Length: 154
Image 1 (cartoon, rainbow, N blue to C red):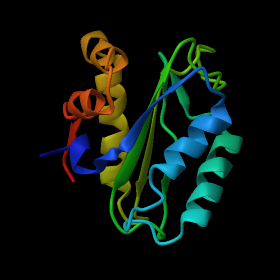
Image 2: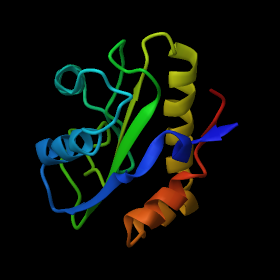
Image 3: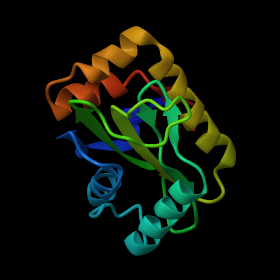
């Protein structure tokens, strides 16, 4: 059993305040700019933006999960942004602002594992106690620790 902290580095987490959707996406991608798990960062940006244009990754209850699964990714990788203040307009399915965004990327041939990570991330977020632990974090390190409860088999 692995958890989110096996695929997200401590330096791939940030806290922002009262920002726009584009700024959050830019930050999520910037946090991954030095990752050796991604062979083409420009293409990753294109894929994430393309996905956002097709349908919002704002899944509700203040969570957005921009994601992609492509051959330019050598291994599972993630970044996260906690959004302070009023949150961020994301065109979420519940029309509520996003307070936490986590970008998840995986290799093309990992469909089953990829779905487990996405599903378990949503399940943890729907747990009010676990969600509040992330939302009340004061540092990136506290967010990292709170993400360790997201478990999956990969």
